[in-house]
Length: 423
Ligand code: GLY
Ligand code: MN
Ligand code: MN
Image 1 (tube, rainbow, N blue to C red):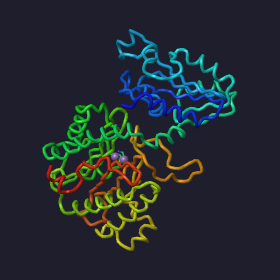
Image 2 (image 1 turned 180 degrees about the vertical axis):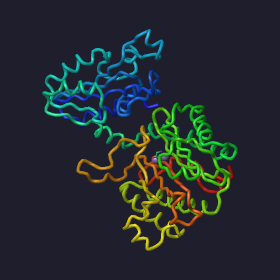
Image 3 (image 1 turned 180 degrees about the horizontal axis):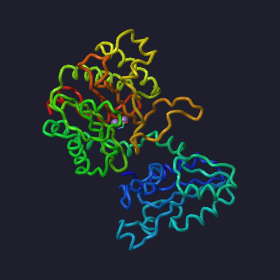
Image 4 (image 1 turned 45 degrees about the vertical axis):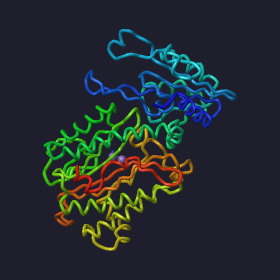
């Protein structure tokens, strides 16, 4: 759990970056309707959560920065016995005061009145431009007299890029659960008949071990299904002698994990699978070993493209000179995605890849990114030797950039062929 003093420190760091005579408004997520009157489980907005750790609906965090003084306010929904009977306990103003170290707690019904008052003599309004709902419309309407609107998401994203020890501990906890789930999948695959059954086994471990949710919809893709990058239907049969690409990670107390393993249904890799898998695994390990402060993520990208292209030529999947093939982007057909992404509160953490001047941000201590090379060969790709057709493989780990290099946070999740086969 992240302590209140850390949230307070984050708010202090954000306030420093704000213009004087400004108001910053961050809203909680809105509950989302699934169909008719049923809703998806509520999940707090990540930027709002990062700044205060409050998990309830109908809330707002406001930072008012004047010339000489900054004040922070949290708006929480009112206690309401009847509504709480249906949707669960609310903290309410009185209890919120004991938890959140802000200047004043208000109830949400006073929000508009307060905002009008604060906006009167201000110049700038910050809010999250990616949010679009009637609350944002209201803010826009109330602030037409200001000098400008600014996107707060960029500034919070820049803070979220560097993880604290507390955040890293939560990611590690999420990964320890995800590891158990992947190992169970390795053990169970042979005895199950459907992708969704395997998905259920994985997600059972998430819930049993205290991860309320997955960090993203699990991908359990057998055989050629692995060549659909965002395959989430998971409604096909598990076929013997095929591989299953499992991209699944739990979210633990608002922190993600993101792991992909490619494992044989039968428990044993066949020769073509082994050849392709070993090539990708060696590339993955080499790219991970490059991670260190100062390096650019694009350097990892281009190295991964070069190594995978080389590997494809060695296996006879591509033919020709590696440099020329890369220049013509021939490898992109089989490796169409990036080498990895930031990870944290969101699986694709909303942090910048470039600075204000559009220069790439080099890797730095405390950043967490995935490394996930993959090769995908369609079952009807006649240009490839037959034995490789219909195979899709990705191997993904979560890497922390440390002072001198890196720490593979998902180190213990089996990926060597002999280890996977042993389960
Ligand atoms: N699980 C989503 C991704 O690997 O980016
Ligand atoms: Mn990923
Ligand atoms: Mn993934």
